[in-house]
Every structure is written in structure tokens, then in C-alpha cells.
Picture 1 (cartoon, one colour):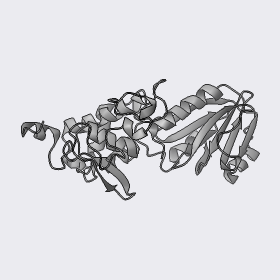
Picture 2 (cartoon, one colour; picture 1 turned 180 degrees about the vertical axis):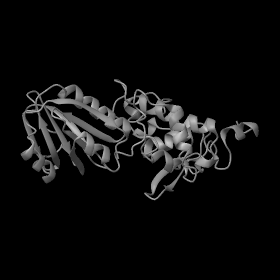
Picture 3 (cartoon, rainbow, N blue to C red; picture 1 turned 45 degrees about the horizontal axis):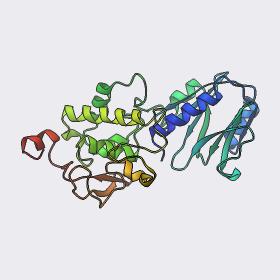
Picture 4 (cartoon, rainbow, N blue to C red; picture 1 turned 90 degrees about the vertical axis):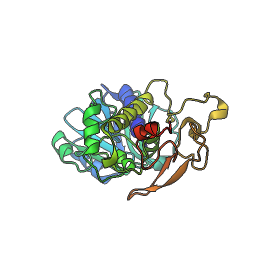
Length: 289
């Protein structure tokens, strides 16, 4: 599933290409979208802006119409110049929006809905979103408090809960916990205030670092290796994710992995750097670090 940084980059790219321009063509395989187009034609509307909130992408049209989409596991938005060959086949197209210069195509989406402001506020799953980690006004202290209000959850599960903070996916979950020296299977109730704050500040730092103009499309949290063609493997840019059985980059202990939570998402961690029964401060006091 695309993570918050991917959706943020997609929204930014779509906004640069489409904002302020009039729609000249609209197509969709979704009957509900097509029915809205019949009653409230999309062609002729101007795209006001495109933005991301967590893992949701919102496209605002003139007249108060909003297109809400979610990528889930396989969806993606592409932008092409008019006449440019698509990188995916026609049968994967779910939505097409064209202006005089560009064609925006949504491939393999499963969730796509038209809303107005009122219906968007009532939309389950979206209305309950927590603050976006990539928002300009994100408050790390408030986010740490929201995290600690879920004491019975495991830390790894809580980081994925979009109603706490929005934007963290399975890759970032493992990477954030490792960089914060917190075992992802600890209960949130065991976190010290400093650890909760560190998890949120690290989450924001990692996501923001992956949406810069030069960050590229692959998630990078570990930069100890030079970015050369021989380091094209995505796992070479990460601390622990998908590195089960390999040596920890800090201590050389074998990285472990197992499924976590009701969705059975695989979590990766270092048992030495992220001990289950001790906080980072405890480890320092005991001489581990």
C-alpha cells in the first residue's frame, strides 16, 4: 500500500499539472462517478487544487465538487502530456481527467467518490483521520498525546492507526520504531513521554525527508551507503524493513520479523537495539549503550 509520502508526491504532481485548468474530458469505469457526471458535468469545471490527507488524495473542482480517492494496495495516479503513451494498459484505467495540456489517469483504484464539503465530513474512514504528518501545522506534542491515548495497543499497530496520525504505512512503521529504539511489540502504555515524542518527531522527519524535490520515489531512511547503480535494491536504503535474517546496521544482530495486528502486516526489528522489556533510557542505565 502506498504510504503518506507517495500520496503527497502524487498530489503535488497533479496539482502542478492541473490546478487552474479546465477539464476537457472525463471518463470513469465507476458507475457512481459516471452518474454524477451526467447530473453535474465534470467537463468545463476548473480544478482548484489537489492535496493529500494521510493516504487519501483529494481533487477540488469549481462548483464545490470534490473527488476523493484512496490507492489501497495497487492504485496509482499518473500524469501524461496529451498524446503521450501510457505506462500501464488501458484496461487498468479507472478514471481519466484531461485538460488541454495534460491527461491524469487513475489506474487500479478501488475507492473513488465524489463529495461536497458536508458529505466529506461524514465519510467514514476519512472523517476520523488524525492530523497529517506532512501538514504544515502538524503539532508533534499533540500527536504524542494522541498516541498515548491508546495504551492497550502495540506500538507498531498504533503507528498504523490513521485516526491517531495520518500517513504512516508498514515500511515507515518498522523504520520509525528502529530509529526511535522502541520495540514495535511493546504496549503504548509502556512508553515514556520522551519515547512517544521521539516516535512522532521521527515519523515527521522521515516522511518530510521523502517528499523533497530530490528525494525520488523510493523510501529512504538509511543513508549510510552511497546511492550508486549497485545499490538499486530498495532494502539497501532502509534500516530494517524487509531485512529479516540480515545483520543490523548498528549492532550486527540478526534482524527479526513477524506478523503483527489483525491485518497481519509484517514488522521488522532488531532485538538488541529494540529490546521488548526495556526503554532506551533503561538500556543506557544498564550499560547496554
